[in-house]
Image 1 (cartoon, helix red, strand yellow):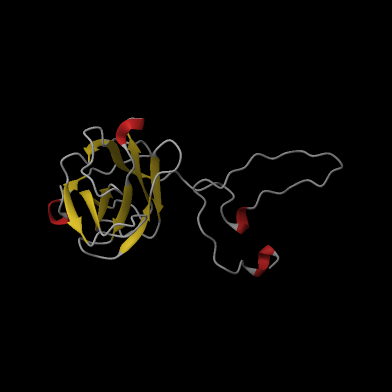
Image 2 (cartoon, rainbow, N blue to C red; image 1 turned 120 degrees about the vertical axis):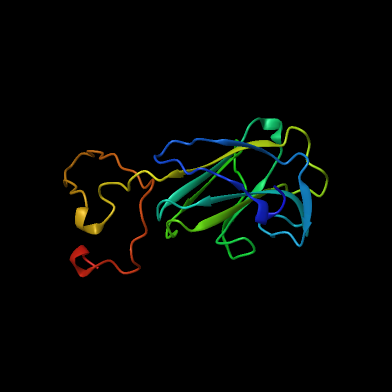
Length: 178
């Protein structure tokens, strides 16, 4: 819907799977004084979605349905007409994810999806959007759970990831060798 007050309600997935809702910019109305996230124009064709957070950490995924779907930009707001929390445009194959922490469970958030062009979006301007629970943080997310590394003359690689790691405080505790 072109107005955030009539935003389409998204169902938040209870797990990490994406139960997508199909969306389109085709036929969207243009709003002036548009959010300037990646859009040099002061006007854009947009649609709005809303969801009630079920967890403090949620992932919002938006993916173009086809390469012909065109470019889009998305912004996350704390209320209809409220403060922008995050924004971005897809890189590469046309998907965009917001990994948001510090959300308030049961609070309603708004997602604006819009084109960066001033002309009417084409009929192929289609995407899928979902909100899902974030996977758990890695087991060694905190300093107190650091994985011990063995000092050796050969490299014994230990696999690891920073995917879904949480932010540590600016100054690690003294027990971590700070």
